[in-house]
Image (tube, rainbow, N blue to C red):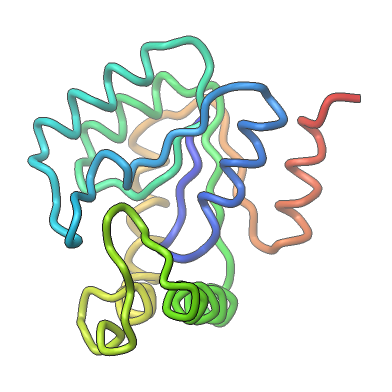
Length: 171
């Protein structure tokens, strides 16, 4: 299963709960792409690692794709594509809370410890999410049409996500 959506929308939250309910590994695409210091791993290494991971039996992978060809390849292997597509105001509030929490707790995200001055960077999730929400939405709409994914679901608010995840909980 693949979980996609704009940066900060809650892909990892949704994916981790789905993986737990299904009893399969949760895989974060950022874990392959991001090196310490917020540098990017070479694309060919990322592709190789992802291919090795998704050839296993059962997985929930979340993340955003820089490589449309690799995305299409992985999406074709997924039994379901879950698109978390919340309104921009909700995404921005989530990113702000998450960023503030990381500063206060001094927690790391893939080798990167956030500081308040980082919020001024054009690549910081606050600015990136604001700029990219519309672009990701258009891009994923087009990719879904081109990819021919057999099954997909688009979650537009938290309540809908909660109901969707509840379907997979063991009874």
